[in-house]
Image (cartoon, rainbow, N blue to C red):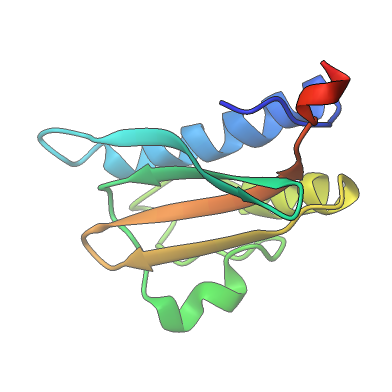
Length: 123
């Protein structure tokens, strides 16, 4: 993983929320596949992805994913408060980064975020 700028406790919260969702939405799978990947670096920012093969979502609702109390699945299917992804977006935005997601219903989801990369000269 890249070395990035950020408040370590806040970035831990981002990863906890994204990994927690991945575990939650893959629990009905016989074999869960959850990955944390560095997708690349561009313009001094690293792109990180948390990807799973869980329940996924319909991309026509992607705009709702990061809203407070927005849920795309029924509460009786998957527990939660609907604030996890909103928290992720807010933390990443405060760090000057971006968030987005891709998914396919029944096939899984990928959640992306960017953070400024620490340059090799600063190490």
